Image (cartoon, rainbow, N blue to C red; front, side):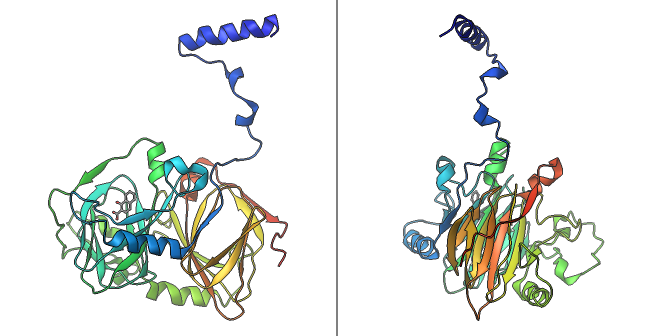
Length: 350
Ligand code: 1HN
């Protein structure tokens, strides 16, 4: 070591003793020219998730003081110690059996439920009872009380999408059990779907002025209609679930999309600084992520990490493919951190 280097090392040590550090110590790798993520592209097969839920069915009790939720998380191998699906978001799968009640609580994390199969279960959010049907999206905004209960006859499964790791990174997680075992269902809540462009003037303290339940039976016809027009170059036919009161994203930290690819349809390649978690709701296809093909079928989930080139293809000649997805663009855009680039070179080579 040269004398100069030895002097710097000594300086660094003296500073470290005082909890001070020179910026010259930052390695060049910490200043990448373009965004770099530890999150890896990955695909989870439906059969593995479903088998896991079935195995957990008889072993995990959904009740107060026990597990409270029979939920499996998708763990990204690139950030495996977090046990989260990306650095900002969590995709999990929850199963509830007839007669069970997933007890009420609230937390500073926001959640979405996307319903996959079964019938007869409902979520109560701040007193509003929302009966779940396949393809419905139900929101649990941050700090709203929520419980799930099942009055049907067969196991019910849905996706839980949350901003847990983002809220964790801000170190503002708060979690509170509801003071009673059950939450009352209120009769004075308003389903915004009944009101369209108007809403009731009420004296009730009512957080339900924002819509919480997007029904598949309303969404699907609109998506089909959209798919008769011009496709988006990168997305095929896609709709964002918006908050119609603000025109803003689904939730302040999360945006949900529903996307249709017509038989044989291929999109062009692009990349952006948001991360996307996808779930194949129907059909089958391939998404190429930074050159690597991920083949998906109904029920599979996959992640497109930020700043990774990606393009989608519906491989079927006869069947539409429908992707549900959740992204973290709402936490990037307000700070000028959302960037998009495209089109890239096609990587599909089919
Ligand atoms: C949660 O509260 C639910 O309420 C589901 O059903 C999944 C994953 C992480 C943290 C909280 C629920 C969750 C969760």
